[in-house]
Image (cartoon, rainbow over all chains, first blue to last red; front, side):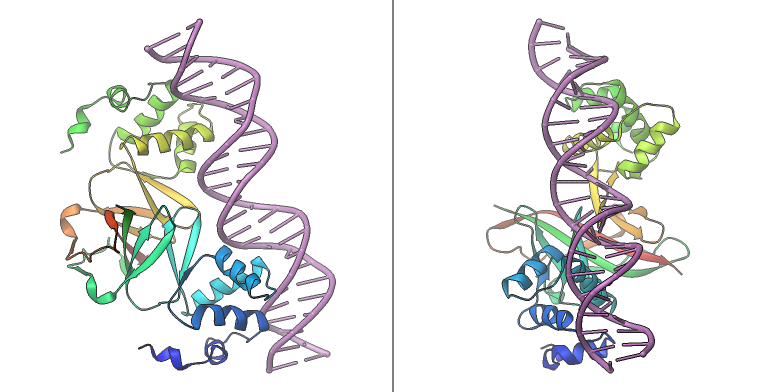
Length: 137
Length: 137
DNA sequence: GTGATTGCAAATCTTTTGCACTAAA
DNA sequence: TTTAGTGCAAAAGATTTGCAATCAC
């Protein structure tokens, strides 16, 4: 279980040093209450509207990036021209189904990259990402 | 060594069932003569202009996608909103340096993903990609 | 109050598209 | 000649930005 589950969204924003504004609180609630999620900006905006929460798309973009910078989200790039944001910030990898645009976690324990190559001279590794593309059989 | 090294770009296009037009021949020459490369559409277009080869950007995009479909190139997505095309179509993975936008091959032999997880029900794995993000120390 | 945040619309950037023109077979 | 390929300019889609209005502290 994730320790952060026990934090209210309000507390999360406080810890991240982000003012708990109406918009940020509402988006954080959509994102962090319940199961882990993978959303695009457009999707999150649509969901907010569905819940009758007035937020502009620009603010959704800003918020997603602020959350990412604060370590509350992780950005996943699997498709040219569209970013996904993952509420699971622990080390893990992804399945991606292109046709449906579905991104899905691979539990950290079920895949391991062993024996990493050494990076080019003067460089350090900042992250290792595995994307397993899948298709309907 | 790559067998395809011995094919002229003309033959390559023929085999791929693409008419060897002036533009395609010129772009293929930039891409396939010499070392393996990672280029964006914009970069390739710039390079063509540099060599005084008149090609429109739209044609560069078309050509990159046709080459990719024909298996002459491989598309690599590491950054939101920009695609790279890799002339190395063999199975291998990448280092990516965000700051400089530099993509670099990891020799196929020096990294192996062992023990793949089983895909979601009804799905088959189409590809496995590892991206190791690096930064200047 | 004061500085951070928001919303809007316009701008930007990459990529795609429609269509008349050109070139390869 | 016939069909595929090209170039241009316009369109599309995702994202960002500038700036005045608004909100949290």
